[in-house]
Image (tube, rainbow, N blue to C red; front, top):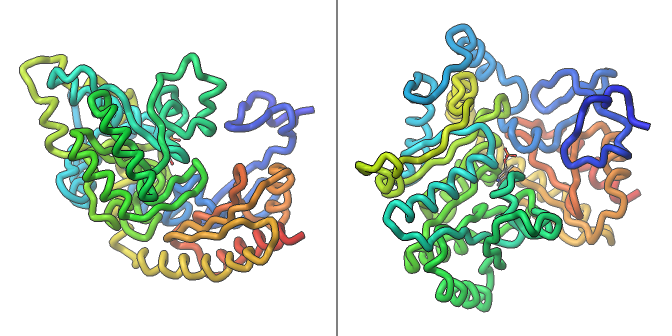
Length: 414
Ligand SMILES: *Cc1c(COP(=O)(O)O)cnc(C)c1O
């Protein structure tokens, strides 16, 4: 029997038949979620990695309040506004190379779809009509819409269930070893004429399993993409904006993709906002006397002024405290405290990169039970498949982070 509060609600990734105890959040502050019954939870995942500076940051709240007085929303077709101008300039300045042309959307999935559409149309505008496929990797996650599901890990993207409706894309293993690199080259040798772009989450494949790879791999992809005349898209929706210890993951490899996608932490976890940013040569590929060479996309709420105001404030916050030092501390604390889990038989691996801590189990049998137990420790942690992970805000305190790591150890060892 379902709880009456859930009478009209359909939750994501949830079997509603067995979901009967809704958790009702009342307010948030810093890294704390207060529930309706007064219980306080330490948030270990910063609301799906969005609240990078912690909840209710006064600097962001102040900016959005000021914007609310002036103009909550206006369409972006044929008219622009100061918050979007400011944000586009900030992003162009922060991003490496000539990633200068910003296209705004309102969700990560759509930002990835726009990147794919951009890549394909870039070639179509040059009459290269065969380059329409996107190459992606096992373990990848790029969104839940039809086109993005097709480039997710086949299992994660439920390709078997949707096999007759998803567009067919090539998905191959990440070229992490010498053999796989050769396999990758062979693949491109045979298929480069049909490939528009290579799509990857640089350094960390997030929702697909919190898998890490070395910066070298990105350099390899950049070289291969150049060699075979294929675009390179970095989906930094998870890794972007500090999470891996540098402002963008691509900074660690010194590689500039042709297109990059951002969302999640872009507005500091305050409002829905995403961006697809292209390099100059991609943008120039759409300049023409032909009207239909323009990028044919335009979400109704794109570049929403309130969301842009949040993002402007959030980006300014990166200059107002030493977030890199915070992440260095978080990384060291996660490594030290989570390593205790390695002594448990059920634990396969513990790994940490930046403000990402992962405990990988051989198997989680009772995921819902595990979630309940974590809640009993007054922490908000959302394990999935065989993974328990922490992606706290960069402003979490040492004591709060300890509470999170201890809860994981206690739950796993009992
Ligand atoms: C979350 C995520 C997306 C999808 O973003 P939504 O806003 O949920 O549509 C795409 N790519 C990556 C890497 C993500 O982490």
